[in-house]
Image (tube, rainbow, N blue to C red; front, side, top):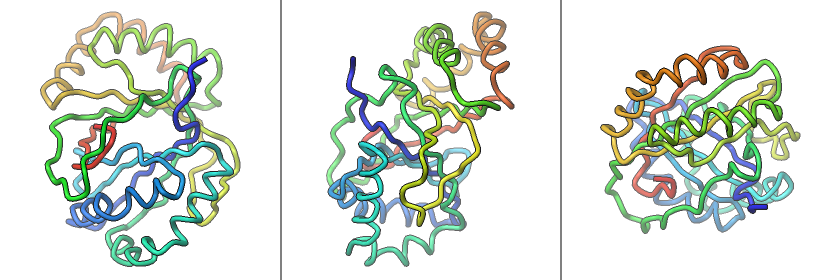
Length: 243
């Protein structure tokens, strides 16, 4: 069995004050990456939401829920956050849009990250990440897992977009209540990576033209959901490991 990287993952979507995203990204990339990882968590990736200039999206991973609590206590109680929290919080309208997730199964965790550029690196990569979010009326079950591996993932691979990982809701109690997470929801999501905007656009056009996707896979997927899948088009920041 393959070891799952980051068995617990937070998907964090922040709404920011108008024009404040560059300030937060610069602060995050310069000050917050290494101290969080030193506290025991993994900063998986951080992104600009290309559809909304006032949204910042990022993911971080943990070995388990107990060590999540320890890592968050160390970081948010530590000197780096205390020194910079007022400036960081001043950029945010809402930071409570957080989903607690875990890999769908042992085949669905994130791959080893690329080498992260050093502190001070400012060149944003041209690559793009597409995050597809699916909301269900019931928890993700074995039938959905089978659907993903048997039907969804093969078509995405055929379309040139092998998923980097597929996640679903983690139902464990929030072990760090100072940071809220959304509850009462059943979510599955996957991430795919592209060299740039042109490749992402071509992928979406391919799916739109694909009879197999439109008439077979998408209807079977949609029958398990409460609404259409939501897609977030993301641009990695200069120091995002997932890029």
